[in-house]
Image (tube, rainbow, N blue to C red; front, side, top):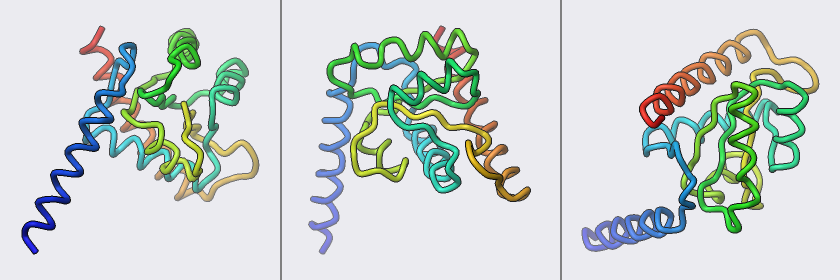
Length: 157
């Protein structure tokens, strides 16, 4: 039984290595394990409350319309030209952005089966309203992740 868990752990490490090898060279700032987990949790919660824009087209449209939030970009996109303009748009609009290692993990967190290049986590749903308590929870988690991203970005640049 011990060998199964060891084999499972080694397979998990192998998958993590493959994810890191597939990363694009422009994937900076890249979230560490802890920040990645927290960011994907925020994406999952935002997807439940319909506060999420998925895909390059929707994200770019939302940024140009002036919506604010956190942009989460997958680092293993090929060809990389698909998303190279998104960080520039985010910087111009003062929107924090972060790269996560895997587009598959980002899609799972965003409640879709199709791998997703990038998502924009909004603080308010586009349609309808959230309950006061849920709105405050989402906002608090959003602010926490945004401050962590800003801190990481300041260390990088």
